[in-house]
Image (cartoon, rainbow, N blue to C red):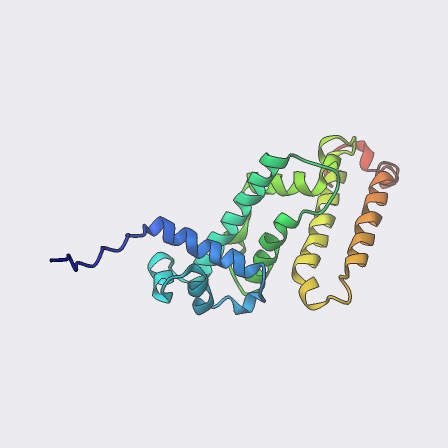
Length: 202
């Protein structure tokens, strides 16, 4: 007589479910408008039941913040694997920046979105590239340049999807080339501002 017992389902750990949900958010955030990050869409992408989200996270915001933390770790790992290169805004940080801006504008407490010191350092080194590691620019100039480049990345990440006529590939390349050319003249330019007297920001 054949055994008709149904094989037991493999139990998926809570940790694995959390990873699935976080990866689902990240994958969706890379391909759809962020306002479409619904419980149903995330659960479908993670191949789980919508109720699973709320068994593992207090609410959707907590899941989104966990996704930002994972994206931050990916930026850190990317730096560890590739090292700093020449100046080139990093695509690996686009989803991180875009999701962070969206949550902030949606009312999330900014303290929950603040990057770790390691994450901020990785973003800075990857964004500034060799400007950070090899140039003789002082710290004040590097800090100002990093702020400008992050604003550029934020524009690309958050505005480009619905303003493709402004952020065209050619315009983006021109902007990168313009910033690169400006960097070459930064020592003399910042000297004229009196930034060569020290690294402190007054």
